[in-house]
Amino acid sequence: MLKQKLKLVPSKPGCYLMKDINDKIIYVGKAKKIKPRLRSYFNRAHTGKTQRMVAETTNFEYIITPSELEALLLELNLIKQYQPKYNILLKDDKTYPYIALTDEKYPRLIIIREKNIKDHKKVLLFGPYPNVVAARKVVNLLNKIYPLRKCRHFPKEYCLYFHINQCLGYCLNKDNDDKIKQIKAEIISFLKGNHHIITQRIEKEMAIASQKMMYERALELKEILEDIKVTLNKQIIDLKTNDNIDVFGHYWHNGILSIQVFFIRAGKVVGRINDLIETVDDKTEELLEYIITFYDKRKIMPTAIMTTSDINKELMEQALNIKVKQPKRGKYKQILTLASDNAKVNYHNQRFNVKDNHAELNEALQQLKIKLQIKQLNRIELFDSSHLFGHWYVGGLVVYTNGEPDQKEYRRYKITNPDTKDDINALREIIYRRYFKVLKDNLTKPDLIIVDGGKAQINAVRDVLDGFKLAIPVAGLVKDESHRTKELLGQDPIINMAINPRTPLFYLLNRMQEEVHRFVINYHRNKRLKGATISILDSIPGIGQKRKTLLLKKYGSLEKIKNATLEELTNILPTKVAENLYSTFNK
Image (cartoon, rainbow, N blue to C red):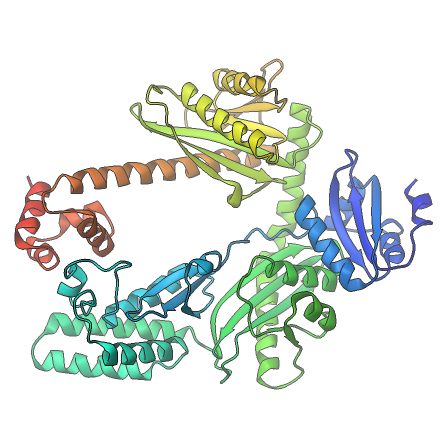
């Protein structure tokens, strides 16, 4: 049937959609000429991901377009709409953090993500920083060095930041224009890569502090200087340019595409990310799709993109409306080669894991389908709950798409019913809230629900689903005395199915059970600690929201506040309040 259908396909630009036995779209591709591209799938042998995709394909459709560019744009829209299992679906679709210097009379230095930029009217942006920890370290470092404004809204009196010399007291001291102008200029210079002004000033202050025998201050300045040097050591490349460039290096071998992205800002590399992808289509087509998808949710674009010459430059420039560089010599060529070399190293470090994991994952999903007699398992939703002696009940939802954790779909639930005293009723509330929202908002329904527990948990879920008239299969995972995955429970009727601990299915279910348990326990721990911290600090006279925030910012945890000396607490709190806090913890 497919061969007969292939004869009717025209050799024109367009998109093609591969479908499985359930008429579900499993792959979307585009081609300058559809006919030869489709024939290449069915008229020769394949390996890896392409082989699996072709084996599952029982039908296909195609859509003719006027040009290759329109075929590309249609392909991307169809991928967004159908989320096909064999297309490149970027797991890391979050927006990256930027360092922002607010353009206010009294500026603040903050971290914002692209999705929140619209909430800030005027800011100077530096980044992106793929590693948010690195961004926070830079912001904290500059906030230590410079007495910037810290408060979002001006208080009516001097705050604690003023008393610890980390703010000029802008709320009351209005005449700071010259000082602010100097601070802004030095911070902008630092974030653009010129660190000499700051380092020289700190070295001078450190020498003065030592001469005056202010050794604690000298040590603090020395630590700040070391932090700056650590930051500088990461800037191994300097292109002497003010352009913001994203560099895409790649390496392809045996059906696996390794991609390395360098973020160059003001001539220096501020971060990088890498991806390893098992390909279906031609590597240049997959890389083009990856790059364009990469910018799908980006609100801030670089000045230019740099790629190797085998990518369709004109098509990418038209699709993204951005300049594309494909250097053949000089410094830009060197940085592009370095990105590709890093992609090759990453490929050799992880290639075996990629192929082995895909084969093992497919086998595990097939075993699970057979055991539960389910036709497809594209989406699995797992639930668990946690509590402390009948209190602090919380729950969590973890989603696996095509056997891989889909973290953007994870959800947390704080149990709202005050009469909930057991796991079953907690689970009922979670399931009710989840699938009420699924129906109300027309969200994607799972192919399988897995709960942590046995017959009682399965029946509780089934009761709620029956009330919604949802026919979704439900299974349970039972643990042994050592808290390890032991049995899988199916439904209709509920039967215990022992799992061989040496099979891919066991490893998959065990990973799933551990993941949902980890997710819920972390949420429960954070809620519990936050509640404990708030309740203890709120009970101490003189500690309100601002002082509580300052204490937690400085010490990080209740335990560290508890271990602080009275002298240390007095440095940031009024004497009477510090004595109240100290005595509370040391009774």
